[in-house]
Image 1 (cartoon, helix red, strand yellow):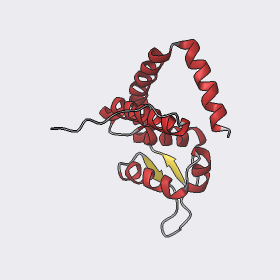
Image 2 (image 1 turned 135 degrees about the horizontal axis):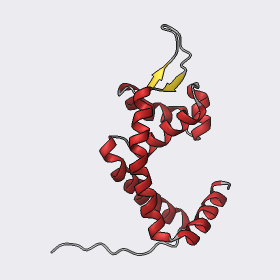
Image 3 (image 1 turned 180 degrees about the vertical axis):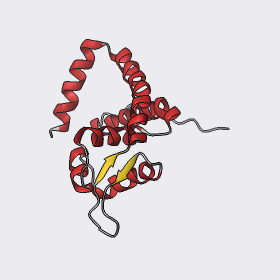
Length: 142
């Protein structure tokens, strides 16, 4: 006889936010999968496109990630040629910028990202989504 898991709704705000964040991240990853990137990679490319050539420290501050987490996200993007290292050979000071291939990828991926955005808009509706975003920003400021 199979044991059925009882799913009890948790009163914990953190647990519910983590569950929702995981579901939303998975949805965006599925939408972006035809491009071969994840939503964290998409976000990283967008931020690098926005700030331009920067050091790993500058980029980590921009995206609010620890350098080690950032390095793990950067590695496949650099291997695929979407991000270039402008540092002179033999130097340790890396200066990164998005490559032409990275720019082209972002153009293509933006269409899939927009689909994910539209899907969430349909879940909430415009008015609720505006309030939801305000509340997320408040939580981000804790």
